[in-house]
Image (cartoon, rainbow, N blue to C red):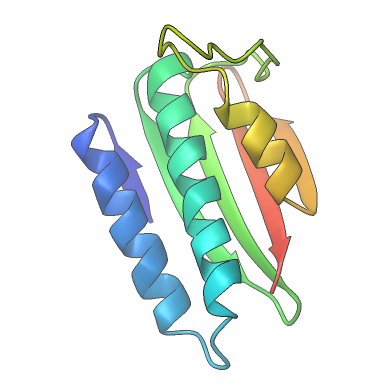
Length: 122
């Protein structure tokens, strides 16, 4: 589990994800591992920017799946927005996450907050 409260935590989330996939037996295809790493990075970044400034990351594996669960403090569901192609203000993350995952669910937390479960084939 990784807890994040600062931009530096995204680097720790990436490191934890890389170590997680590197230690799996059998190891996922390198391209799949890189895709999983990108999804985790985008989820953590979105949680910091739009989810209340803190998140918790949990990684799990099944026989056929890799799953990242990112919990944050905001009850608001992620929203699509038009990517900013010129100003650098983002808008690409949620589109990317939706495109790269095979299964995506958002579970409300008791009270406030939510957990986004992003699944990829192993």
